[in-house]
Amino acid sequence: MGLSPARLAALDEYLRTNYIEKQKYTGVLTGIYRQGELVHCSPLGFRDVDNKRPVERDTIFRIYSMSKPITSIALMTLYEKGLFQLDDPVSNYIPQFSDLMVFSSGSFGDFQTTRPDREMTVRDLLSHQSGLTYGFVNRTNVDRAYRDAGIGGIKIGGTLETMVNSLAQIPLEFSPGTRWNYSVSTDVCGYLIQVLSGKSLDVYLEEVIFQPLGMKDTAFYVEENKKARLASLYGFEQSGPPKLISDSDAGSYTEKPTFLSGGGGLTSTLDDYMAFCKMILGNGTLEGELIVSRKTIELMGSNHLPNGTDLEQVALGRWSETQYRGVGFGLGFSILLSPSDSQVSGSKGELAWGGAASTAFWIDKSEDLAVVFLTQLLPSSAYNVRRELRTLVYSAIDD
Image (cartoon, rainbow, N blue to C red; front, side):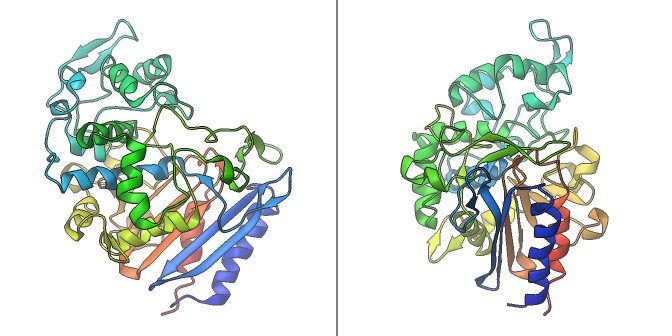
């Protein structure tokens, strides 16, 4: 397997002593796949501290933005059917977006706007260059308008259609294709899947991604007979242990939502998400099931930022899901362009992303490696565990 057992044991000990025993995380689950096998699976701590329920291999986690790569792959299955091109204007399929304007000044109800340099394209959505934003970033009058309209929070009401209708009334942060801004773009991709496929997003994901890959525990909510496996969700406390936000009895993701968030609404397990990663490592195929072609994986794994630059040059704001220097962005994933510039261990071309509750994954094709890290602490910026985990995993390679 090319990984040192002693170094893997040291990884577990590091997480135990620095995060579990110090009560930073209540529990974590780390999975490492290399050279054709799951070589490391390590549950530590509790999925439910109050009831002393341990983290187990089949524990279900809220993966939040780790939903985005799944939705992006699903949309590209429709690309492979010839139903759209990446440079198609989004308004071809979502007419509500035909008159989108760009913010100039003012506030919600009294915005001053200008026309965009060009229309938003499907590629802009997939690569977060659309001009859309998130309401919780608290940076501009545009994201305030999102909050006022109830767009883009962790808990969202309505439907994908009502979201799209609301977005059509709010100006873009910037002209599409000129900047990178983390946003509800992938939720719009979810709506686009519904428009193009004629099926609801949950049904399409189940038929095209989850069933073929054997992802039996991945869904937009946790069914009654699985609730006991759902990890509790906790929030960071400046002084003291994490505070309970939501448990498995009556908390979030325990009822079927009306808003199917392709950008942040899925729950999953280690084995399920690792199956998704293995499919990407296999160039779109897992155990004979072709999800997308090798060329589509290559296209999605290419840097789509302007002029091949990195996020440091074009991103608005900062997000803990990725480094910015030396990192680009593809169609649903961050792309490691230069390990030396990013100052973190890894390989050029590595695909990665994370979720709001401190989850993370990365896929390193050159090392035939996939890593999935699962926990349940909001926000993901609380600790620097993602960089530390990379150092510990890569230091275990001994071939």
